[in-house]
Length: 283
Image 1 (cartoon, one colour):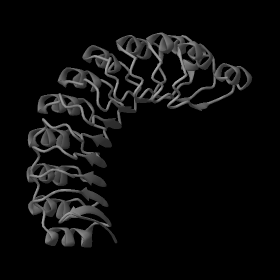
Image 2 (cartoon, helix red, strand yellow):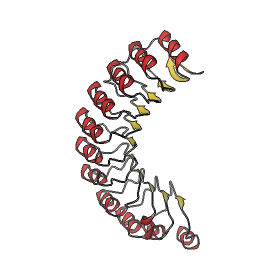
Image 3 (tube, helix red, strand yellow):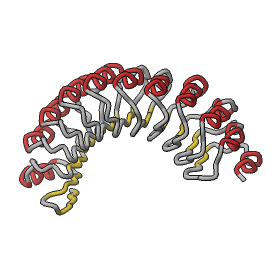
Image 4 (cartoon, one colour):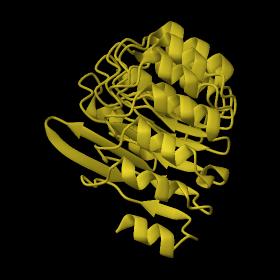
């Protein structure tokens, strides 16, 4: 049916075929033939392999393809990363979440795609080395590194040095990061507007001091499950982050109710969890 659709609707520009257990490599040539295709979402298509991605990138669709989502396409490996980096020269938005077969070497190839604006590599084997390579994509504005647990302060520092125009950064569950990494990132990425450091359990009030002092355009931050952050950290945000409008702080046991009450007076949206009773305050 998909091949018939591709033949009869050759002007398709947006195609979403998520969670299709019957979709195989045999269909990828038909998708690749769509000359006007700009957005392709194939998340959770579990049978697609490197062969299918090669058929896709060999087709004329790569001339206009700007956005690609391959989340949880678990049979894809480094071979697909090679084809994407060599063939997809206009690709700007890329999601490669939970690709267990893609190694550090494969992720390094993505760093050669200097046209990328946004990338999501949640739950991959990203290490300091591959993260440094990713930093070569100097046009990146949005990066999601959630659950990339191999990343350390060294890797994030080198990455941030190259990606100074970042606006969105998700570091949730990057459990090895310390205040030193946040300090380096803050001084390099001064235009940051959204930051997620949920469950970065080693971070302290010092991280919020660096962020509030340098990242003047910070609009939203998630510090949930950062159990070392205290009232002092919120004080830094409240006093120095003039553009801050949204804070999420779930399960932060060292932050008092009094500090939250003061925060609500300054910040329009505060979501928190206090004394085991979820609450949400909106001004």
